[in-house]
Length: 232
Image (cartoon, rainbow, N blue to C red):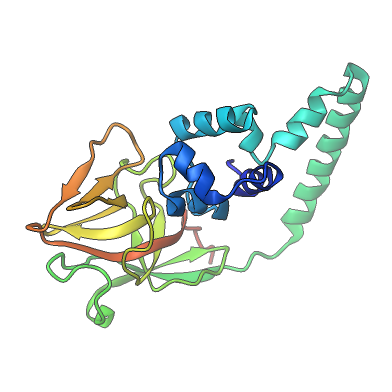
């Protein structure tokens, strides 16, 4: 998993500002800042450019880098000891987890939203809701099911997306949008005279919203999860 914390730490060690890094990568500062904050992660091209810029392997920015790096420095005898120790820890953890009572939190998910109204309108009580459950408690304004594969692998079909009812925040964030009567969950970038609407899955082409289009950003994604089945 990409670690914004490791990126931030390395940048500070090099004595560089976010703006200086962004300029060298030819992106805006807000997009770069979103990486350090963990709101987004760089694509493969930018990840390779970061590695080249800082003189490190791409894997350096993974949160597991230190663990793997230290493990590879062990000799075979100590690797075997480490393997046994980790297996024992995992066994104990699983035994402890099986004894815990998991708290489930209900999430009200919009079943159908009239596209002419769009998401984020103030009359949610007129819509139908489904109740699903999560093992985490979230702060959000509205929730919707994710349909399709265009935002995979980050956001998967059948998951629930959670949104804050906010407008445009920064380039590259994932938003709920309405475009010409259709609802989407997409990354959005603001160009000079248009919005560029991008899927995470490279199989799906970019879309664009111009001044003549009926376009609205109705919420920014603040979380997502796979619903947990509640046992009666």
